[in-house]
Length: 576
Image (cartoon, rainbow, N blue to C red; front, side, top):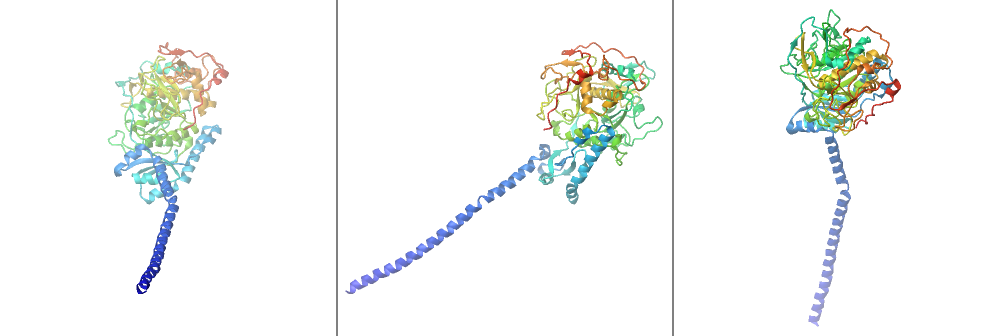
C-alpha cells in the first residue's frame, strides 16, 4: 500500500506540475506569437509608405536633374563652377503684338510685356541668389537669370517649381570666313556696283527711287569700323558734324583678353573685319564709286556680340535684348522706339559646342513679335543634307539664308542644307538664297580699305538690304514679318533641287530660290509702286548674268498679285 501511495503521489505531482509548466510554456509561446504578429503587421503596414516616400524623393531628384543641360552637368563636375542660365517656367505671352499695326506699338508692347514678366517673377530667385552672394545677371528678353555656380547651386535651382530648365553658357568659336587681300581704294575710281548687288536686281529698285530710306539695319557681329568711308555716312549716330553713340551702339564684350577693341567699347569698333564687311554689303556706299551695299539709303546701328569670332549665348542674348530697346552707352534709359527694323546675324551657336537647340529661341521670337526682321546665315557646313544645325538659323522665326556662287544660280558648296533635324522639326531650310562668294566689302584695317570674303555670312546681308528696299518701297508691309517674307519668297527665282528632298518650292538646298528684289517690289510686269523718294544711286541698272547652275533655275512667271498671294509658304510646325 505504501509503495502504491508513493507512486500515485509522484504521478499526481507530475500531472499537476507538468500541466502548470505546459500552461506557462503555452502562455509564453502565445505571447511571443502575439508580439511577432504585431511586429509583422506593423512592418507590413509600414512597407507601402516607405518606398512611396523614397520613390517620390527619387522622382523629384530625377525631375530636377532632367532640367539641367548635359553641358552644365559636365562643367560642374568635381566641384567646378560654371555659368548657366536659369530659365523660368513663366514666360511672357507676346501673341497680342500680332494685332498691332505700327512698329512703335509692337516694340512698346513686347518690351513692356517682357520687362513686366521678369520683374514680377524673378524676385524670389534673385533674393535667393543675393542671400548666398552668388554672382548673377538678370535678363528680360528671355525670362532668365545667368548664374555662376556649382552643381549644388544648379541642383537647388532646378528643384524649384518656378524653374523650367538650366542651360549652359559655353564659349562658342565661330569659324568665320577669312578676308582676302586688303585693297586700298583711291578717290574717284570708276563707279562700280558689286556683282552680287547687281544679280539681286537692287539697282532697278534704286532707279524707282527706293534705296532704303527711313529703314534701320542693325549689325550683330564682331563690331563695325564706323569711320569707314562707305559706312560713316550711313551711321545713325552721325549727323554729318558730330557723332552720338547713345542708342546706336552697344558692346556685349565685357571679359575679353588682349582684344584690339578692349572691353565695353564706348564707340563702334571692329575687332576682326567680319562686322564691317557684312554691314557694308547691306548699306555701304562711299559716294566715290564703291557701291557695295544693297540699301545705301538705309541707316545702321550695331552691337558687338563676338570677341574676334568667339561668342557665348549671353553675348548673343544681350545684343538681342539691346535691339529690342536700345540704351545709352553704358546702359540706362532703354527706348523701344529706337529699335532697328532688320538685323544681320552672320554667326551661330553650335549645339556641338554646348549651345542647346532652344537656348536662343525665345529671344529670336521676341524680336519677331516686336516687328524686327532677324536675317540669319544658314551656316557653312555643306554640302551634306541636314547641316543647318545651329541656332539661330534653325528657327522658324529666323529668316535663314543660303549662299549662291555669285553671278550664277548654283549653290555654293559650303552652304548648309536642310532639313532641320536637331530639333526633330524636319523644317525646310534655308528659306531663300543670295550671292555669297567673292563678295567685296569693307575691311576694318583702314577707312578706305576693302576686301573680299565668301560664306553664308556674305549672303545674309544681301537679304537684310533687300528687305530694307522692300519696306522702303512698300511701307504698308513694314514690320509685317510673315507677309514680307512671303513676298520675297514668292518673287524669288525658283531653283529646283532634289538633293535633300523634294524639288519644291521650297527645297532644302535653295529654299524658295534666288532673291529678286525688283520683282518683289512690283517690277517684272506687276504694278509698280509710285516712287516717293529720290534715288541716291545714279548707276544704270544692268541685266542679271545668265545663270549657269547644276540644278535647274525656273524663271519666275509674271505673276498677278492674286497669284503671288495664292502661293503660300508652308506653315512651320509648332515649337517643340
